[in-house]
Length: 91
Image 1: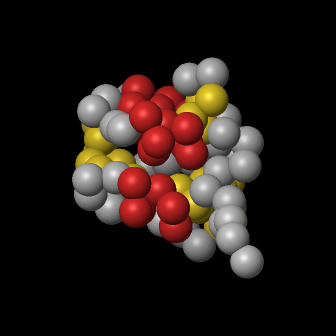
Image 2: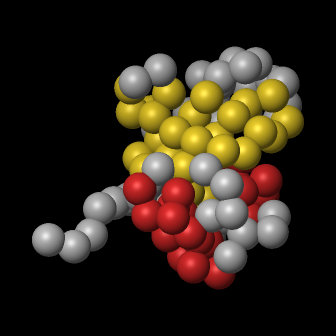
């Protein structure tokens, strides 16, 4: 199945593109998308999004305008758009 990843906030500024379309197995979790995210990503983007080959706990995964648990399986469907929002910084 194909899932579009939309990068928001600081991740959007650090990535070459704000959207990435990946192909994953049925029943995949948001954490299962990490290998596709890290492929070709800058070190700064990886620092913001990934820790121990999973999404950082501080990164909000949003599906259909609702935050989801990145480890939860069977939430993603073919054609879904998953938004990733790292924590805001500054003041």
